[in-house]
Image (cartoon, rainbow, N blue to C red):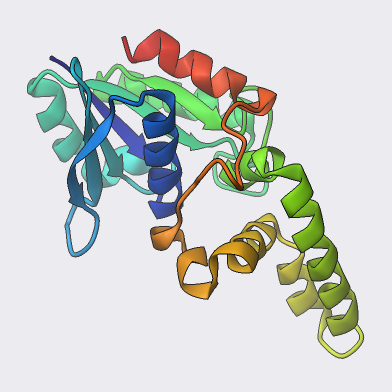
Length: 218
């Protein structure tokens, strides 16, 4: 059985990736859920031929914090994939080009080989939320976002600008979409569920993501 360790930044990435991989392969099932109260939060998926462990590692400096844990998996035969946000120039090592260069430096410094995918599409600056806003069900998102935009407009007349700017953030738009159709509890990152009613896993914006897994999850 082939074994893969996928390092992601946070809980939102882990949940999205878990649901996406299970959608892409209907033989994929959850073998272990060790998210809560775990030093190394992770979910393990299994198919007939693969073991896929998705591990939360944090941001782009992941190897400085869990490097030894990663090395133990490599020694045990796991192939390593790293999925992060490309971010932009306002973030540490941010922007697609800078992030790629940084991760290549890490490979050389640690002598560790891994394949990398950077949200939203491995070609542009952005993050997971950039991708999510692209693949949300158009009709349902338009309806919920129309109400949300009116709310922001109303609040802007009585609130400070910095709060209204927070409401306009991509994370806030994604949270509102979940909250509208899933409720407050299930809008929290750790409780989310990506189902076909609200998300288009066949959207063209996911083609580079699918190609990445077709190539590296053999």
